[in-house]
Length: 204
View 1 (cartoon, rainbow, N blue to C red):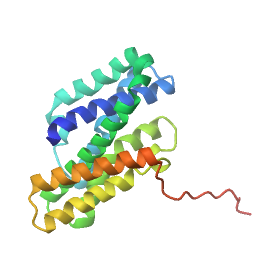
View 2: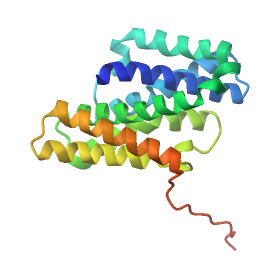
View 3: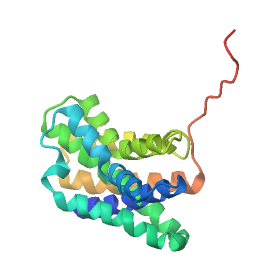
View 4: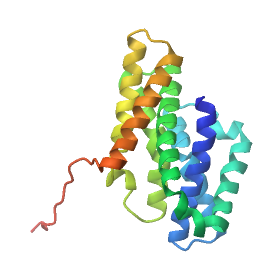
């Protein structure tokens, strides 16, 4: 199940990356690069940090074709994509949960301790979007809108908690996917946010 959701998610993320590139008036090469790093950047950063080699997409070149094609296709259909905003929000939420769980499993299989496994899941879930926003010269969306990174944190923690309780991986994945997706969609619907910190005073 996660593998199918993963493919859908990287396509959706590539398209969101292409739209971000379009807002910055980038050329086709820029669109392709931003689409690629948005879709596959989280897993790449995770693998480099954990020493998990070879990096995932290097063993699946079809992922490269898929995300770059999705990014370039977006340039053609972008004027009509506002009709699909809600669909993209759901796909993005599904992608966040799937990426987080996949990241957890990678670190868990490498026998890393609990906090590293959680961080691995979060890095996989959010780093593609962070890299996208940095390259597009804006504050990463995950740091200033509805609960996003926190949802990934909760998903990873609950997933590991169920495994510790003896629930098998398949059932744990299904339960946490449902819980995480519900939480993320509620955060969007209700506008749940963390408290913000604003400090404008200059140091004398």
